[in-house]
Length: 310
Ligand SMILES: Nc1ncnc2c1ncn2[C@@H]1O[C@H](COP(=O)(O)OP(=O)(O)OP(=O)(O)O)[C@@H](O)[C@H]1O
Image (tube, rainbow, N blue to C red):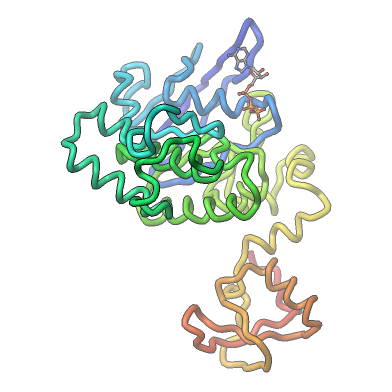
């Protein structure tokens, strides 16, 4: 879907992206991780030509990105950023409608699209469509920013710290919504963050940058279980890597079928990290496991947390 071939970029003679090659496949949720100044935002902005690359090639859907007209890029790639960038004198409705309006959609289609997106992002349309950005909380503004990025039904969603500066509860809720949008609408998403847990929770693939180069790229599990060097180990945190690994696996993966245990059941969809907490809190060795409908499935045993299966 997006292919970067030997791409470099310098500002004032200082190289920020250094001979970087990367293939982003259709439908993938790629998270670009790295410390401050490693080049994450620059990399993202070159993908939609907010910044021009100095050398190398960036190919989108078969063509070099420079050959696209700006309005075509805006239609095909949604862009959401931490500072949201909503137009302050425009209503929520008009903000979300930015790209559909540029594309000359009929008014009825735009109205239906705004209603659909507000509903998707859990902002009741009748309450929010006529409001102005200053009448929204920070989290609501970020939701509107995500809605605006999605409005033109882009093939790709580029997001630069879209949930930064939010409280943990709102952040978790928006992450859940984004994961749902990725799954339900089969979007290709590229998200920049420096939040390791956000990356591990959302990514199908993580790209770890340092000084404008890719140090390692792989699934969250690969990054944690097969780090290529000490930088990767340190970046993900030496001390709690085991806990993070448990966070990537579900109770369902360790289920003992056809066994039964007493007590309050846990959900099969829970992560092993969450169930570890339940084990410690309740001081038990086994917990009954149920599905989303409360149907008994089996048990999970404390010892099974040490299972070496990935
Ligand atoms: N327009 C610009 N002019 C000059 N230097 C720039 C410009 N934009 C970015 N840089 C520099 O390029 C480097 C990479 O910046 P970039 O914003 O891509 O990093 P980042 O990994 O996204 O950082 P952060 O996590 O702090 O947002 C930094 O050293 C930054 O100062």
